[in-house]
Length: 329
Image: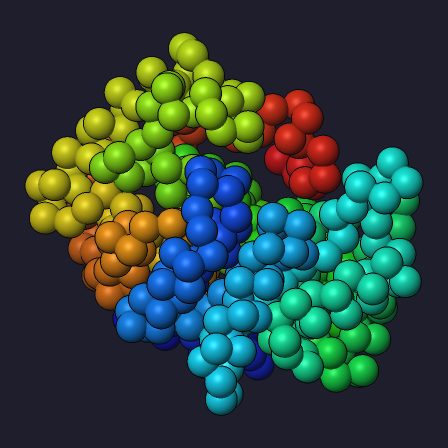
């Protein structure tokens, strides 16, 4: 697998990371035992960057990782990133207060069983608190030795530059894939400008960019997808029909669709690191293969012809799901 830096001065990691929301039941039922097996397979495949959050399963994802580390013993073989800032306390959806973030971070460290995390993100910005002030809070965690580097999730390029002027921002996490290209309208460029990694979550378009995309019957049982515009008819049928061409192209190139989608993303910049998530080892192998696949200019052109910018039917979020992410284009 190809290797890349996580942040300006951060550790070298496998270019394909792992999104540990899949250690919860968010996209379907799983077990802690299965998740432990996924972590074993990650190491076997060269996936060394784990991304989690305190709200993934309300601590379950971090606990699984912590228990795996405890059972394994010895030095941690992963670069671990986690997040804080989403809350349901006192009717608030987001809380970037210094006290809240420190309490969330301390709880995350306890669940993970580590003294410090390699990367700590503010999961969602609280609009009432200036980003410079939030960055100062995160910088304090670095000084205290609890965090090695800081980042933000779903922020605008302008906010990133404001934050970076206070303290180096190592990474920005944003949805980015062949079906969500908005980061190319400023965020990809701003991250490159300051040397930050762009950590791409949902790099497979929440399953659309695979050989086994979710069908209507399965989506009906997924709380997030069943209200997401891209997975509601008539958009779902339109998106599946267009993606049939992408799946055919992947087959023609001799790789799974997921492998091709990950490889395309990696080719969008030396600072782009996808973090796909899955509960299935076979799928994990497919996405990991994207981290070693080189694409010719011809292959990239064929992909762009089939899935040009703006091809997806429906917004990437519903009105309610848009609460928190910063719009900038």
